[in-house]
Each structure stands twice: as C-alpha cells, then as structure tokens.
Length: 194
Length: 212
Image (cartoon, rainbow over all chains, first blue to last red; front, side):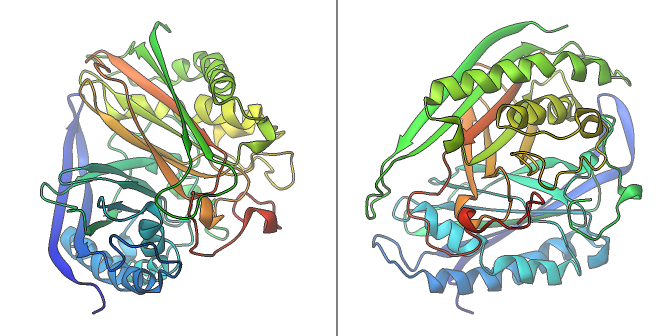
C-alpha cells in the first residue's frame, strides 16, 4: 500500500428522532477517515503522482470500510461524498491530487455504481480541524431529499506533515425531507444528474 | 416571516500557497445572512411557503456578494451555497435554501432556464440555456453560535472542471442563535491557485449539460 496510514477512524450515526418526530427507519450515515503521511510535505512538487495513487487506494479502502460499517449491501448505498484536510506543511493541491483523479473510480466500485459526481470539500487545517463532507445521491445528483453534509474531525490530526482523507456513505436521505424536488422514485439514472 | 438580523460578507484574494505565483490572484467570497427561523421550536409539516419568500433575499445576497468581490461578472467561475440551522430548528429548515439560494446566483450569472421547473426540481432544459447550467453544490448542518460550515465550490457550467473543485469555510461568530438560521452563498473566480491535477478545463467545456 502506497499510503502510510497512521490511523483509521470509522464513525456511524443514526438519526431516530428529528424535531420530536420519530424517523422510521432511522437515517444512517458512515464516515471512514484515514490519517496519512504526506509524501510532499514541506516541499513544492509539480508532480503529485504519489498522492494520485494514494487516492486510488483510499477510495477503495475507505469506501469498503464505510459500507461495512453500515452493514448493508454496497448497492444499497444511497448517498456519497469525500473530503480532505491538509496539514500545515502541505498545500491545498495535495488534497486535490488525492480526491479527484483516481479516488472516484475506486469508491464507485465499493458502492457498486455511482453515475453522479461525488461531491467534495477540502481545506488546510491542523489537529482537530473539522470539515463538512457534502453528500449527494449516488445515482442522481439532483435528488433534493439527499442534499446534505456530515461533519468529520480527528482530534489529533492532521499534524503538519499529514493529510486527513474522508469518505462518507449513507443508506438514506435527510430525516424529514419535505421541500419538494426530484425524488428517488423519479430517478432516470442515465446522466448522473436526474 | 423574514427578519434578517445580520449580514456578514467575506472576500479573500489568494496570491500563492508557497508555490509559483500566478499572474492574477484567486478571488473568493461568501455572504451569510442571519435571520430568525419562523419554524424554530416546533415541527411544521408545511415549510414550503418560506421558500418563495426567500427568493428576493437570495437575489439581494447574490448581488451584494458580487459587488463586494468587485470583479467583472464574467470572471465568476464557480459557486456554492449552504445553511447553518440553530439548535431550536431542524436540518430540513436549512434545505429551504436550495431553490432561492441556487436560483439567485444562477440568475445573476445569466441562467435562462425555467424557474417554475427549477422549483419543482424537474428537468429545466439546462442544455445551452444561457449561463450557470450546473447544480450549485451545497452543505448544511445544525450548529451552535460560531459554527463553521465548509461550503463547496464548483464550476458554474460544468461541475467536472477539476481545477475548480474547492470549498470555503464560513462562520459568523455568535450566530446562529438557537432560533435563527444562517443562509450562505459563495462565489469564486475559479482555479485553485496551484492547480495541477489535470482533468477537464473550463476552456474545454463542450456538452453544456451542467457536467461537462
């Protein structure tokens, strides 16, 4: 494995009630986080290929772990998202190299499909920095009930020479969606948008 | 229904990130409106009336943000939106911003689609209709006063322009109070300052379908 992983964190949340109403079935989300050493820390490099390769590995590893945490069939994942926080000795583009060229294809394998763009966020940060990982339906980005985000943070990461990489998956949309828009039942599923 | 207590605008110019300095700085901005949440503290099944009432708020905010950024409109390359709901509200209250916030920025940037279809979420005939064809990416959360939100940014016409995937961290110190909501819009002149991981370029957008 190209990635030098210091820590893996898996978090699951389950919303059973919202504004006093029972949410049945509970909406569930899983976040898988890897804390890795940044091979380009403290130096400017035009070429970021090592991080591109790390992205491909982590898309698979974190995708599989997040799906396993939900205890569902990979194809039953409804929404996904990704994010990264670069430590102080890195630059934002290190996050981009992990997230964008190759991570998506491996994450899509871990959830078996995924025509939609995988929404993302990135930032520079320090130990305990939180990031909001955007979520969207994996078959149709415009499904309005599934626009959401989940906050991820690691209390002791990223150190200056580290990067925190996050993958999130869900088995559901928001707890009490009622603002209209395209519904899951209306997905045509051809263009990844509708 | 709408009582705006505070509007906070942030504009930044990014000259470099310890790499080779580009010719022009990246300009990014976010505008956050803090308003009373009329549904705080109770479950309201029909929250849709507030969506319509927010349309002019969105337009004012989009114009205000553009003015603060002080760049030509044609330089705006990417956008995003978000919401932070106070503790006495529910996540769904933040979802009210999808239509009025998204529509506002897209209209400012020259979108010529069907507004009624947009509200319903049906196909708005995005292909080739003016500008701002792409879904406005978003995040939302329920949070305490001072909560930060990472608002995603992506290209206004083709979400897959890789060099323009970004996010803007926004917070309004002391807000939202438990019975308030913060609605956020963000815009940027586009490419990350040292972008170099390839992918679709804005110059090569060809399908004009909001994706590529």
